Amino acid sequence: MTTLSLTLRPGESEELLKARCEKKLGAPVKELRILKKSLDARKKSDIRWVYTVACSDRAEPRGSAGYQKIRGPMPKVFIAGAGPAGLFCALRLLEHGIRSVILERGKPVEERTRDVETFLAGGELDPDSNVQFGEGGAGAFSDGKLNTQTNSPLNREVLDLFVRFGAPEEISYLGKPHIGSDRLKGVIASIRAHLLGHGCEIRYGAKLTDFAMRDGNLASVAVNGVLEDADALVLAIGHSARDTFEMLLGRGLEMEQKEFAVGVRIEHLQETIGRAQYGEAYPLLPPADYKLVSHAGTRGVFSFCMCPGGVVIPSASEREGVVTNGMSDYARDGKNANAALVVQVKREDFGGPHPLAGVEFQRKLERAAFRAAGAYRAPVQLVGDFLAGRESVSFGEVLPTYARGCTFAPVESYLPAVFADNLRRAIPDMDRHLAGFASHDAVLTGVESRTSSPVRIVRGEDMQAPGFAGIYPCGEGCGYAGGITSAAADGIRAAYAIARSRF
Image (cartoon, rainbow, N blue to C red):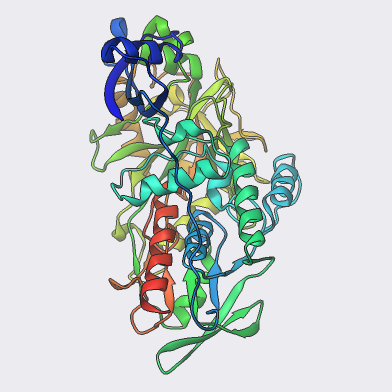
């Protein structure tokens, strides 16, 4: 295979790539594979797609993966959580001949989706089946973004597995791959079918409630209070499993505070972001995104989880708390763009040295937002009014997308002054890099409190909790990942560790 770099102008078809390869090679091309695709928009007058392609004058054979056979009795491996870390751990364990048991406190993704839709329409919150809990994890109700700042060689494996189970093939080469919440649910169902078809067990409504050790090794786990023999336990519990954190801490697992960030969701018209990023070429290009950082105040402020053409989604998992997140479908064709706009939280903000003090800090903000807006409505304020220090009374061209409804309330009604002050300094600073970011009519919706886990469950180089052989803290909830791809990669890493050191 020959590797080439090619470019296309906005609006040009990818069918032109083959002809341009043949022109460069001076020979016919029988196979062409896109290795990477990214948009170069540094000059609005010269925007272009940049491709790295592999091409050949003959068809290349494709290999296929098989399963190993494990010798001796099948080990009993439990995985707590059916998010990216848990599912990908189970997939990789199968490659080693190990059929795991997945414990998911929530419901299958189809039933979970119905529960979420009921809540969005004004119904009751189910604390175990919502945007945070259920098959697929929190990422199932997001943009399905797969880009990551980690450089793990496992990232490629994660993308290939997503494609294998139904994700668009383009995620394997796009510079900023995403699946979209709508397509991601189908991928999750395909993974489930594969696991069940190869002898794994998935239990829904099954919460890890305890475990027992014998001579320093895991002996059993309690599922909804009932003990079962176990050889290994993977903690892929997600960043919102607060009751599970309390149980694990009570059992003596070493846990430590971890810094995170909190703030708001900011919404603009998607057209505003498109024009700012691409100029007049924006209709010919995919919905524009952005990533912004400001150090104008006393703390770092940054955008996070930007959702082009998406919505702000109610994401509470506890009663009488308001939590926001962003979600968009594959097409990203909604009218608004939204992103988390968050401020660094420091350990001194937590109010004490307790390992779960960060959890209580999050909960305090979520309950304040609930009181400010009422009945799972969200507190909102226009950017122009926030910068001017006055309350909002009406919306302009940007209408909020938060489904449970909104109540005008100042940001200071749920965020401490240091966070509001840093946001107030950062927004004009970011506007200098992205014109229109500080638009008066842009909407701030609170509160964005679940950017990442506020704790880390300590593990050793063998990925096991010190003093608790057989327990493997893993993924975002345990403090070792920051998104779908890195969580899935950590799940694979846990599977390798189990296969290597336990059986």
